[in-house]
Length: 301
Image (cartoon, rainbow, N blue to C red):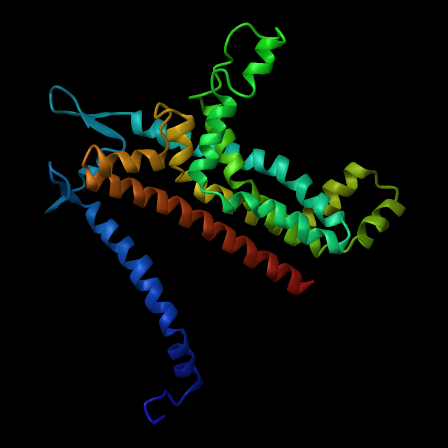
């Protein structure tokens, strides 16, 4: 009955991993290949693609045809790409500013209370992201939770106009993905030997020096992992830009959805998706190389 099983350890290992390879191939590699192929085809006016090879989708990222049918530089889509990166990095910075103190606070708590705080951090994931983002419309909108008491107290006389701005989108992104920053940093801080802090204090280091020269360098892997976990979903975010930006402040995710749903330009939407995928892959490659170098330095030490 076991004659068909591989005889070598490598063969048995491959057989054991075959279901995982199959799932990854069907649900990740195949869609990526289809998307890559679509990006090099021509669009069908009624949706879909024509089986005709073309680089028009990639050319459209940076150029357009003028009235004389000449290619000229078009910064429109480039501005959307830059805005996406700017808001993503802004969300990373805000998540780091708010997330690091929270993770550090949880680490300092008694062990029997840490799980409760982690439980509180994960509670937002129990609610649909769409509902959570709608809540920010009530908070930031005209006559909302923030404006009403300020108007009643006479502090402001007119609306703050917080909605439909880059700031509103950044707030929505920060709120949505803040737990993804807190959890990796907490995981790094939890393994921190706090006797090192006492040693630094004995060597006359102040609190700022202890934080910048001991704590932060030792939990750098968690910080980098948190930044990547926040950056990837922010770059392709769709709900926050559409609801809090009012569709006026497009990001890559919104632009991709528009190309597939309304513009019916599937090749261009696929090209944007490949651009987004490339940014994510490049980020992960840099992280993997940094982690490999860090591991090598620790091993040599």
